[in-house]
Image (tube, rainbow, N blue to C red; front, side):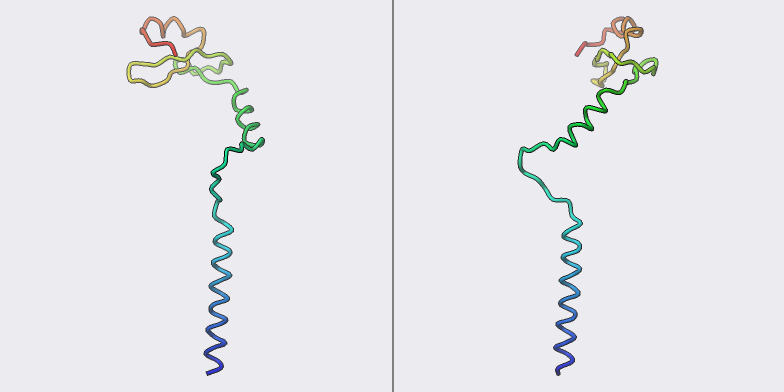
Length: 92
């Protein structure tokens, strides 16, 4: 009888420890409006990178954005800008 009680207690402790380990690994959901600075700096670094033109695929720092016939956003470099205007794309 004593061994059964000890076995149940040990089984309970093992299950409790597994539950706590899995709870720690879950990503907590934040419902507050605090923006962490590390996430903001990563976005700023990505913005500094040059973007590719949708037509010629050359990297350019300054793109003009248009909406094509299907509603897809298109980034156009200054060289390809006349092509976008010739296709009568809407400027965003």
